[in-house]
Length: 234
Image (cartoon, rainbow, N blue to C red; front, side):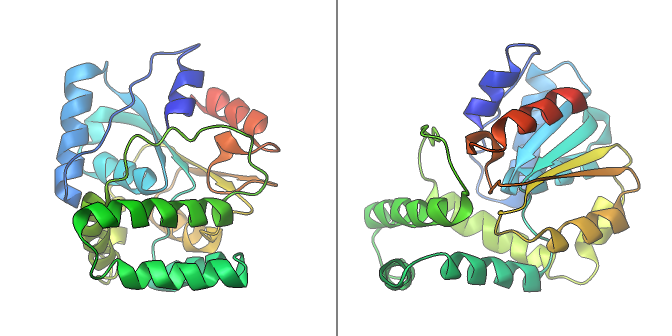
């Protein structure tokens, strides 16, 4: 999110919190502490991908910290939509890339920690190809691949997601405006996001960006419109 934070900082004050905890609750509490210590509350919280879900959790548990949420390329909220992501990504790879994807997934099961870092980076490169539509030539500014954190936090979220009624009850406590920005080429299907959020939160607003994948600020056709929306919503 560094490119987004940098762009926004030209006009408004911005924090770019980094998550280091290895549990869902740990990341929620870490983000809460960062906002309490460093921000003038309430804030507009902008989250991308997993960060969008983390923003929802924070707003649900600590409503006094936020006055608006902006969710970019959110993760989905049901197992069926999650399976669709895998199919979409696989279909966008050529035969050689699909073979390598399966090899990486197999090797990750037994790889040593230092080998997992390399494998996760390669996996990220494959998904970068599947998740972007027409990217600009720019560094995504990833600091470090945190596979150990991912391997703990994501399975924990999946268990919560698949617990009947849990997320709906959790997020139905949110009573601030929520804006969703999503690319029409994003492999995360909007059908796994929009109906769920509308059922939980009364004040929701959706923008669908054409010619746009999972990271709008890196997309040639969507970048300008994306930042127009961000500034207007903030």
